[in-house]
Image 1 (cartoon, rainbow, N blue to C red):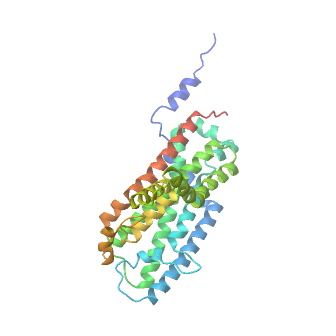
Image 2 (tube, helix red, strand yellow):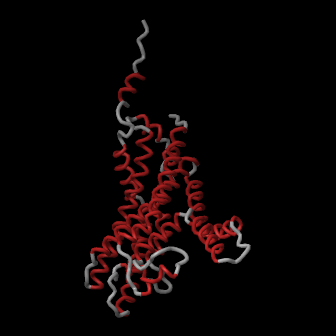
Image 3 (cartoon, rainbow, N blue to C red):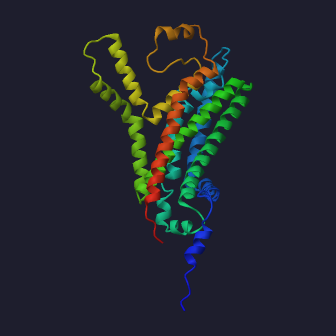
Length: 329
């Protein structure tokens, strides 16, 4: 008599449970790989050198400029001197590069090494694998940014001799959060391309191409689209304002624009709006009164939700594509 095949049932019992089983094992393993890789070490040294150089220049300028600035620690992140830009200027292109580096070979690297089928033969679902790889990259990025954030504040305390105020710490914490979510957008994009393309080099080039398009060309294209969609036939004030509003709305499709405007709203407390400033909005600005923290948060809230929404949408697309992929042993 032929013995019944019990292997499918046994395998089914081994994989019973939550679809997120094994996710934290993937997170721990991938984070260890990220933090010990040579390319991550090079990027960390680059960010470290950038942070130290920009903070040194900012400290020199702050010591030479007299005055009682209530937000002096914020100026550590925003003060620039030729030829070095401010530290936030460096972050606008260093954060996407770090995020893309962490995820461009997350899935196709497993395909090329022929390890993906082995991993999925364990009690680990595709859901847990993909979410674990994304969270590992996001946690690694957050760890690097938090370390640089603490380094700059520590250097500022040593250089200035005064601690930051509570509102400064709150604004800088929110700035750190915005930077992490800004990196999350490019992390999700690189993860998506690592699923679409089987070659890691192709995924990396596609991710960098999209980043350069939004960073360099999108603002130009947004202005051209606004003029084509809403031309100013009669040069009235309302027509010009409508065209400028449309241009700003199109520019905010870019994650770079959302990050830059959110940074301005947090690190420049006197900022009351983005784009054209009406005379009514200048009344308190002329007196030099900064916005309270709550109003600054309300000002940048659409930008923060936009970054989070873009991350969720890109990860959802990557999730659907990964679930539909055929994986053979």
